[in-house]
Length: 96
Image (cartoon, rainbow, N blue to C red; front, side, top):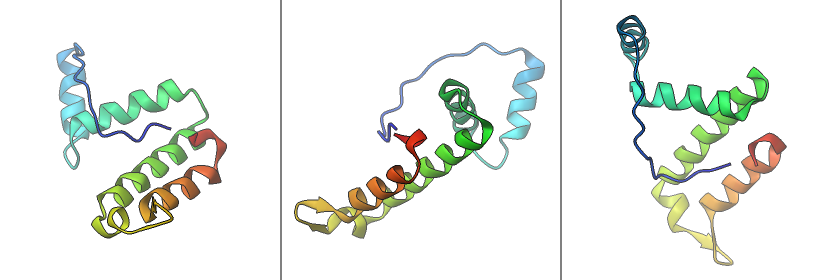
């Protein structure tokens, strides 16, 4: 599972009706994140459960990486963030 923060822009041409529907659906979150999540779920090619689970794990990884304490403290040269992320990923083989 990729947890990098680097995002590469990719242009997609949409019909006006799809654009309008996307803009409406993305009111509470950014349209880029909505489209990115949908594309990732399609590419993963797993069941809806696995895709949703993987998205939940990715969201948890992002939350852990955003926590300054988790990324600042380490034991045996491994941060708390990395330990927690590895445990999350190990729970479900589809997230690897």
